Image 1 (cartoon, rainbow, N blue to C red):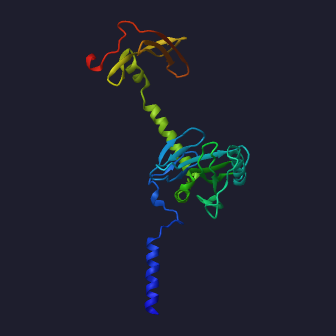
Image 2 (image 1 turned 180 degrees about the vertical axis):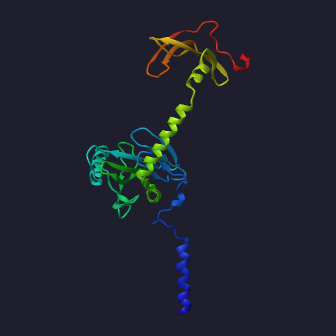
Image 3 (image 1 turned 90 degrees about the horizontal axis):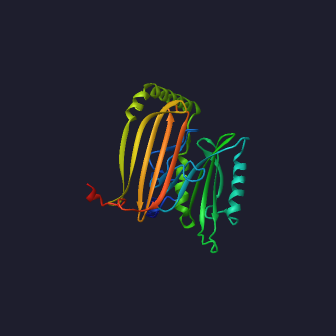
Length: 304
């Protein structure tokens, strides 16, 4: 009996060592550096292999994309009237089902909808699936959504999209990210903002703007425009002090020439800004004409 019991214990230990831990969140797959926003102090550790895109298209604060195509985005939802998590979920589902009528909670996990605590605040986590549709040439994909109630008017949201076949990995990664979700203390945020405002005021007082303006005045700069090893144009920039509309300021005049095969483009830009930064005057004029002798594009080596 003791021998049989010992064999069972050893077999159980071997299984525990070799079976993958699919049910637990693995924070080792996350980056060490946290992503954070300054308005409410929302922060989390993104996937280690993902590339972050700050302020991508749409209203996302940031979107992380990993090599397998998983997209993880962070949002802040602000409302004029107090809002509950249930209301946010309902409105979001209405918007999404207008785009994907066949979207529904996925059956790839026993708990596609769950109430939980996130960053020590009330939260919810959902998993949806949008099936493949041959007519639209669309593969099946899954969506993970997590909401955290920051205050009665603000909800933080994390949203991921992944291929349906990648759901298990994406779910583990998403739930690992959720364990790192934090909201900073509002008093700490206020103190940090006060420090930044004070530092900005100190910088403004330390900068000698007259010296900066004088350093730019009466300067002419030439730039080459190249395509590979070939010169295709140039830019001439002149900076000078000027007075317009009875106000002193800085004026920049730019002349650009670009040769594109048999066409030449000449552009003249005139920019003026007053010293107090309250008034700007600018104009850009561009002409197009056939290429003539003397407008040729020169090889870079020949131009040296």
